[in-house]
Image (tube, rainbow, N blue to C red; front, side, top):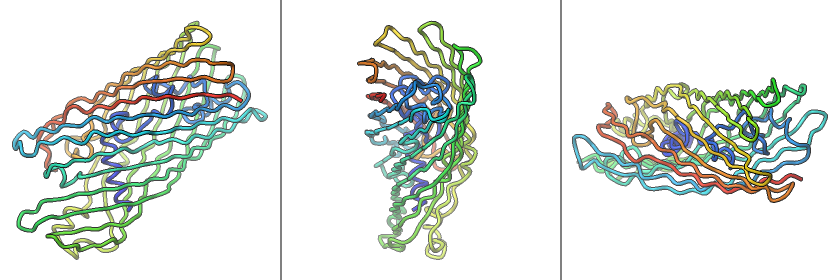
Length: 410
């Protein structure tokens, strides 16, 4: 059910936009949550293996590990129709528990190995009212990424790295369309996929208290294959048969600079996400639905234009070492949306976001640290009128992240 994945991805991303444009979830560690993802140039723990593997070269020698758990809460996104109040609706509030793991090896002749297990995309969007159920009764997507990486310290100031990304995706999509005298048209899809990409990173320290960095994550086409069951007028016309869909996990370029003033480090990071890769959503079945029923084809098989645009995000993070034991962090970010008014729908009512975060780490001993972080992402209200049937305002979109983690060196 690649198709399902695609839709799922789209819907999930809807809620996911609370963290980043589209359906990215960039915060995958205590430090990243605390700093609103201003975490590229200054990455002092094992999560460097994911956020900038070139920085693994600067870690103290020995094994470094980072294990954390994130509670993710997605608020109900309300919709108020401008012409028909019977179409008003609110999505379900969603809660998720996401564990993350990072590991970095000792230095071997200026080379270090890193391994991260994270969840870069996903979440869920579920709506129960008749009108939004036509396209977004449920969109659920889960992704699991394994990201091994290798760094090389060229000299005392310059390091580079590369890694392999393997993403396993699992998706589910359901739609129920009321067709009047024809009864109901229904879709129930589930699918999985395993796809690959790469990442590159560089780190440069022109002076001791200044760090410059750049990272690039390649685009990965998430191709989900599975089974679909479709019905129309109370009759099942496509039962548990093959279906597929593809959606992009877009390329991301990050540039960052971090400067340390005595005990305080300030980092500015810039992200560009290449969402222009998402030009359409096209489900494929083992037969054309047009040969079964023209209405069914128009609802569930005809390619849907997306025409997303590349989006930018700006992140600012502050890290202050209070004393030997305590470090506090804070962050702020502005995140744009890639979705144009013309193609915005119930499955992805994304909008521009402002992100606020706080966190702290405590050094228990020379080898063990614990930390916690909280992030709040506030989405702007958005009023849209388009040919896809949206003629109203989406409000109250927001997300909360609470992370608890520990870092251990051995």
